[in-house]
Length: 375
Image 1 (cartoon, rainbow, N blue to C red):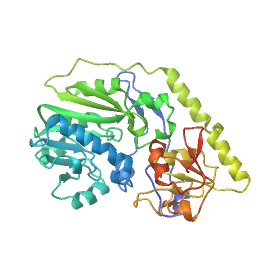
Image 2: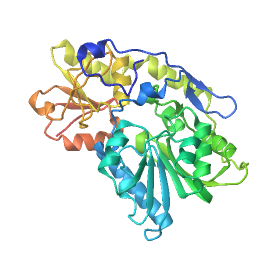
Image 3: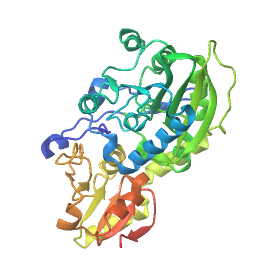
Image 4: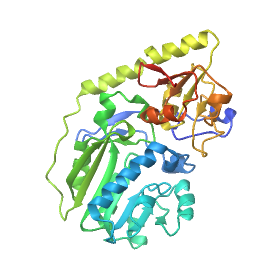
């Protein structure tokens, strides 16, 4: 597999992009599902092409999450909050102005946004770990530490949990949002399996790992973002927790279903629709140059997509690795029309289709057999 977060500056560079083995494994002790090939972070994230504020439904999600936190802790009190992996500040910018807000994120996207948002929150542009907490005077300083969809991207998870515990005040709260392994298995989302997603969490594995780091579960909510996620609140404890609320166990049969879906990826109704259009000389495109798109199009590499639409300026003019599909703006759907547009960012399909009502072709989604007219 090429790296799902990689976007190349030229077509020749894209065609020569590196591929890496990818193997899913599951720990027999804590049940955490992991990618066994751990690609170094400086290769994965040194040129990070993902700005959260460029995705409308994601902005709406963080507005809702900010409201949840404000209701939990009040808007007038000076709550101290630290966000792990703050990206471009999409959550921190929406929290009450009375709060003391810190973001810890080493990415280039965070550095650029941190400068633009100076005065709103304080950015620490380092990896989140004990050394960062100690060097920046963050010990026992925060009422809340939060991280949204960042625990999938971290190799030293024990170090992150240790640092979160150290940064919190006594009985402080650690909020996390993670992609739900059971939702992935139930809906056979093989397009979300890639190197940047180093781990996939179930409620069971999340509790077992955080319990060792002296956290106990206080609240849990299942939310629809990213095709199904868990939002959990843990409380800092002085000793390891022994209270675990288990998810229904993941069975080998669930993984077998996923394997079969992956190996049968050429037998879907969507692929048959592509082939019919291409056979008569028609053209097809995709929408949403996400990690999911890199996985999906590279697993269907013999199907020629004319282009892939994206709304993020960071990606426009670049190319998907290996398949070398150019990334263009939504204007191309009108100026360079195609017969079918595949929504690779299928978790945002309703918003995408509604924003592009002028598209006269057919929409398909990567994990649906239905085909609908945009009009």
